[in-house]
Image (cartoon, rainbow, N blue to C red; front, side, top):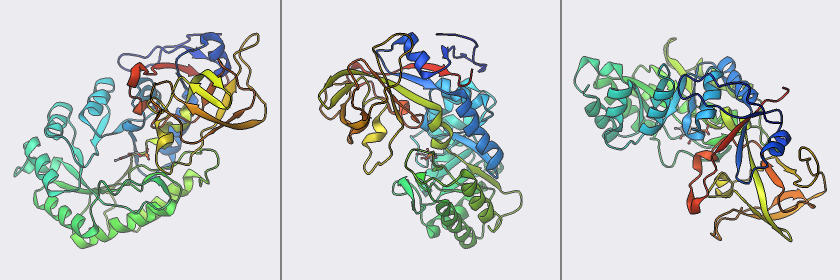
Length: 404
Ligand SMILES: Cc1ncc(COP(=O)(O)O)c(C=O)c1O
């Protein structure tokens, strides 16, 4: 049954998504031959509420994790008003859609002109950096170098943080040492800008202690610099409850951060921020794919690593997404297959031999050509990474209203 029951109340370009009461109803109505991104508004609301009520500071959403307008609308509707934007395109996307939102430009190395455009055209005042060159560029492009207005800029020195317990490390590309970070903080203060610190413990971090260790590095950097800090942004990296992962409750991450915050050599009014991507969106989206062909224990799916399933091809990636299979045959809404699960090799839709999922999928042994394989918990780094290679560009979205 397809029902379009409401228009999402986004300020501009409101997304009108078809709505369904379940994944089975969606598949039954659309019998989709191209991948569909099924969004669960209540899950976005729950994830946002976890951070907005539990994190001991301000929460921004890292847009890179999923910039689909319908996803942004769900988060905005759930109360997210601060956004970690790491490119001018992301800044434009957010400021056009939500003019009242605050963007923070948290990529430490930007293309020429990006900081200036973000400052002059979109009013950004917060920038991450990890080098003297980028500091000079921000000051010059904003035109604030040597002026009293330089203090309007909050400049976050990105520290390299140990990625203990994270699936993907994010400190070999960006981040300085404590000693260099302290020097940069001094330079920022000397330029009259407002000094701040940031780090990223790595994506899908399962250990609250990783945040404590990184905050201890912040404490040491502040001490060595002798500079007063206006904000600390603890980055992203917060996990999502993928099957088989030993994820501590989110409250343990927040408690560890709050406890370290109280021991930092910073003033009472020092802002504490975080910029989760994965944790805000992972649970809110499933990808519905179709089996174009079953050949023995091999499946040809209509989505693959050049589409929504890129994350599966990351080195050492050991996350399994929840998988459900809906049978194409039968009356009424398609039913889930319940047969014993066995491993299948899965290919994507392109002509490229590399378009193959690196690990087998455990699927019901009676899965057939035409069935739909639903990958759950696919909100993070899925549609954000689709390429359009070979003409395959999944772009259909629908809402699933659970409990409706
Ligand atoms: C600077 C920065 N902030 C936030 C994020 C979001 O990280 P996660 O999705 O692990 O929360 C990333 C991810 O690459 C990042 O590079």
